[in-house]
Image (cartoon, rainbow, N blue to C red):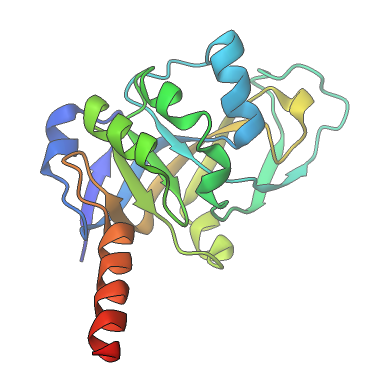
Length: 198
């Protein structure tokens, strides 16, 4: 069935999540890749970042208002055609500092490094693993595009603010207490290799 969580996220809700839990998100999430992460650190986030969820994704967008140059236009006429997770290691150089600004959850694929794991614990945040190849499935949970920021970076690199309902399934892969499914798998594989060679 999974656990449904709603935004904005609280530390209490995050503390209840344990590595291996399956979750679904309802509320607001923000897409951001490496160029957006870099600009957040340089200029600050263009939205209230505290308690937010960042999705490592470069969505495919059908823009119906090609003449609009206002990146915060309330008349934004766009449709998200597909949105799937980007490999999260691209964000390793920026993620700890972005987490320190108040982000409560990261969505991506492939896991992240030890510095990010420590930042998740420090900020009582979580990393949620999305399934690669499910872009069409995930886009069906998007109710609307609420806004877009920094469109000058290009459509995939811009920050898209989206409203979702039961977005998922997502797996808690790195929790706020230091558990890490990726490291568990590495240890299991290494142990099997050792036992096989005995």
